[in-house]
Length: 435
Ligand SMILES: Cc1cc2nc3c(=O)[nH]c(=O)nc-3n(C[C@H](O)[C@H](O)[C@H](O)COP(=O)(O)OP(=O)(O)OC[C@H]3O[C@@H](n4cnc5c(N)ncnc54)[C@H](O)[C@@H]3O)c2cc1C
Image (cartoon, rainbow, N blue to C red; front, side, top):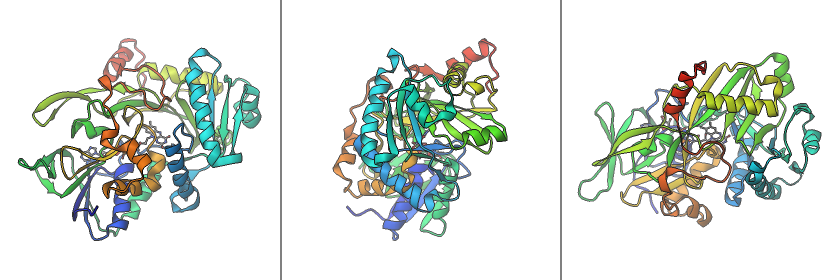
């Protein structure tokens, strides 16, 4: 399918930049504009930007495993991974010895089987705690786990640096960058086709094709109720000494599938702990067409509530007890765009000709930065491979009830916790040192 000449991408994170990179390579004749609300790319509030993101092919789904393997090949062997943007330190997936971890064990087993096919001898099943300690003795005897597996073919990426690199690749191309906050998409009143977008400053940008790569903010622009929701995920950072840095920096990333909590090895004396959970909701009233609806949207500059910080303390007791009482120097809520089964939404909108969505990262989109754009352009051209189309198409998703999604089975924590209520509880309990 030929693409129309005037194309607008909204959003300068992983989904938007990778789309722009592939578009400029495959359609150098197009007039491409990328509009981003943040004055800078990388946007420090975007989901794509952080000290680190795990790059792994460890998926329970074979389609994502294969796509991740293609991305990892780029991270390992091309400029994408150079200058510290990719570090291959391995990934240790563990589960504790309690009944709550049955699904974690199942997920780990499926994920192991898929990744073993790709990484072969890089992957080893670790049926007991002593096996875990045999491969990573530095975690020490206090490590409280029942088993897991290690994949030495996984790594992590400096996520701000990866986004900066993608942005730099677009310099001197046919992609024009603009700063602007899109208020709504414009439609032709008769045909309902997309004609462009309206910006907060009162101006508008016209386009034949609008690609929304607006991450967790997308539910503000199109009705995604039951299809995608912004969920706030907890992250905390602590300062460590030079000696601690040297001890920890070459360890594999550790991910406890039962709690969703993971620790990525530190860089520059900063240790990060994060939680892959159902996340916090932030109900916000927005206007969608003629309707006023409540959707969860990102909230900036809020600390992790006490509940989340306590979960981190418990996890540190289990995984790295010597840091269990160390104060956090910063905490942050980072927003996933969650979909019912954790699948991306890479699809034309069925009701508006010329409107395309590239979103639904569901907490695992970053690693695909070097390869995602090509798949997005395949979908735009109507030739995406059928297995991915079946996962990402608008019609692939039956809207989930009440926006409480199970994801891919790897989530933990409360299912419907409200960010503002949790922050109010934190203040009331006087544990407000959440930074
Ligand atoms: C805590 C956390 C941990 C994660 N860990 C991993 C991991 O280990 N491995 C992994 O692969 N993935 C991970 N992910 C997921 C991954 O980071 C995301 O899937 C991916 O970055 C999403 O990219 P995006 O482009 O959709 O969103 P974003 O990076 O948020 O980009 C969207 C952009 O759109 C802009 N925008 C939004 N609305 C508008 C508007 N109206 N007008 C103009 N601009 C607008 C925003 O300003 C933003 O810059 C994690 C995510 C989080 C939050």
